[in-house]
Length: 316
Image 1 (cartoon, rainbow, N blue to C red):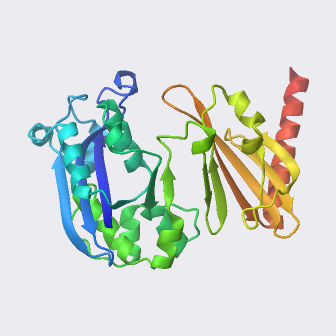
Image 2: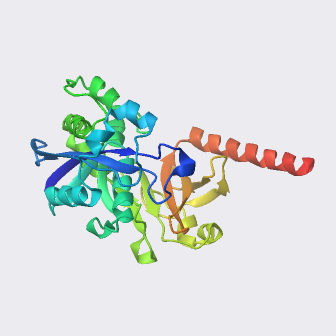
Image 3: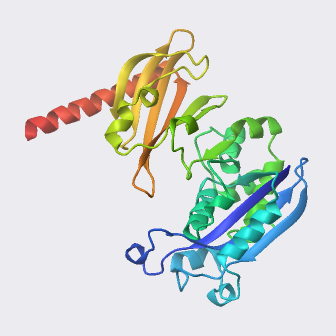
């Protein structure tokens, strides 16, 4: 098995959002990666600069961060060639590691733009080292920068950050400091290539919570009427939990609910509805056991929203 730690740098429209290509808002301009063996020892590295095809100049904010000269990029190779070389270098028996959850999505979006998505079938299983760092050393919820993790773990800084190969190296260095018991149970699934049918729907049980990813729906209204989407099972024993607060939408456009498992206590549910590039919709549901204080906080939130809606109706 090849453990592939990779990082991408990308550009965006120098003219702002109004001039952005909706099919490719972020164009990859550099791929960097290190290959680790099963002892997490570095055995090889990969780096390619990519000649831009969509955006003809580097966005100012991008240039400030990554310090890549556009003239150097023009000497690079086309993305299709770089992507093929990268995936061939990774090998068939590979496992991806990234810092954060965006690199893998942007790789797939760029592949799709060039009609090459078949080279990386999804949904793609990978390991988000940023998330695992938080689980191991912090509070699970907070997400830190790569440089923060390097400083926290007293890892020597040999290269500047925000270049693809350097950031891949640093991500691998963080990975080596994390106990294996924290890594492998906490894999992630990238759903840029989301489930299309009920048979493809995703159910994942983590040590602290469960995640479910639904199939596609034509409209949002049908999603919350689906029995599997709206169900609430205890993430510990997976027995249906009795609903105490029905699904409601909070201020963040996220649906929440509260249920009770007789054996394991309160179960808090969250559903995020996501839109695909083809104007379809799917749900990502999280269920976790919470404390009585968390349950009371959710009750207060629900009551506050109810009173606000009531007041709004009276004013209109």
